[in-house]
Length: 211
Image (cartoon, rainbow, N blue to C red):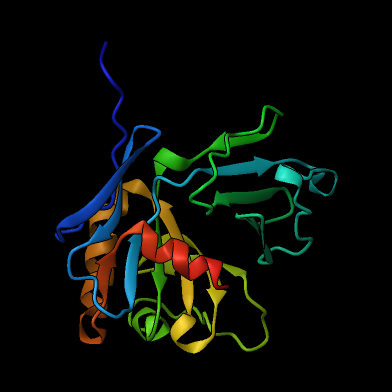
C-alpha cells in the first residue's frame, strides 16, 4: 500500500538538522546555520481552514468568538481567527502540539494544501517587508494581531501582524501555493542585508509561546 506524502510549496536551500513526520508531512524542526535572526519559517503544514456563513456572529469555531470587524484577529488556544469580510473568517492552527481537524459543520473548507504559509519573525522583519509592500504592518492605530489583505511582492496575500515589539516582531503570510518559489526567493533576497535565514518550526514554536 502506497503511503501518501504531502509536499510543502516552500523549498529552502538550507540543510535540515532535525525533522519530524507529521500527518504525512516531512516537517523541518531545525536547519543548519539558522543564526540569530530574523527568521523565515515554513508553516505550510499547519492546518488552515476558511469558514463562510451569512451569520458569522452565530458561529464559534473551535470555541473562539469571531472578531466583529474585518481586519481584526484573535489568537486563542493556538488558533488564529482572522475576520476577512462580512461572511468569511480564516482559521490557522498555530499550535505545533495540536492536531486540530476541520469541524464537521457546513461552511468550512480546508485550504492547507492549496496555500503557502510562512512566518517572518525577529528583528528587522518590518524593514524587510517595506522592500516588498506598501502595507503598514506597524500601524500605530491597530493592536496586534490584525489582518491585511493585499499585495506582497505583487502577490495577493493574507498577512497577519502578530507582534510589533522590536526583536520579538513577527507576522504570518499566506498566498496561493503556486507562488511558492517566487515568494520565498523574493523574501530571502529582500532579507539578505538583514541576515534573514530559514529556520525550523521549533524556532517559531518558541517565539509564539512568548507572545
